[in-house]
Image (cartoon, rainbow, N blue to C red; front, side, top):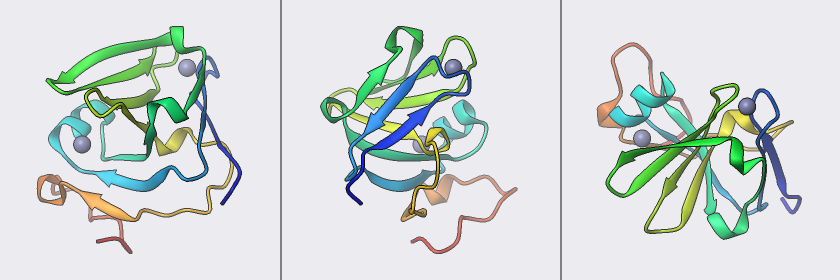
Length: 125
Ligand SMILES: [Zn+2]
Ligand SMILES: [Zn+2]
């Protein structure tokens, strides 16, 4: 893939463009993601510096752990991003991507923390 990846929240206040080589889709089943997303967190990852954001002022930040913070859209509540603060890396929710991705879940993270009410997404280690 060579085209940048467009993503937006439900209300459109926040629009992101990710580089074509963003990693993922990755699925995190950890306890923090469960609480914050209401489910596992499927995301694409890229350096913050490689992502352009329109409407960044609409983001509301929450310090979810000592080394990471998360942002949701203050208008529609969409979970937009987890920032790995020290690494300068953004994990952008895969559900925000507009249009087909040509991707699938490549890896399950924190599978041991998965709740008992769903099976791991198939086709990924
Ligand atoms: Zn929004
Ligand atoms: Zn997680």
